[in-house]
Image (tube, rainbow, N blue to C red; front, side, top):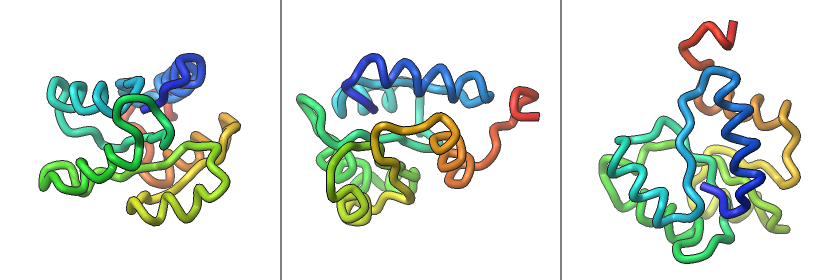
Length: 121
């Protein structure tokens, strides 16, 4: 869930190439719509500062929904207090922008696990 279209596209392309099934959203409203359509995600990469419904409010909605409250969240933000913010919303991990591809993959694999595909072999 990232409002920067270029970053959202790069993250999706990198994770998709590694075998992860990726859905994207430009803000929290789109993320909730995608969840309603596609089902419960296995992991959410979450920017905090976004228009319409920001990351803090989206995390609160996820945590208040019994079906979604256990979905791991990884905060991806340039916020100076990202570690504290990630802890506040119950994120499993955080990545400070700009994010290297290797660090992104390392954190996603640690939180989510290896994807069940040949691409990860």
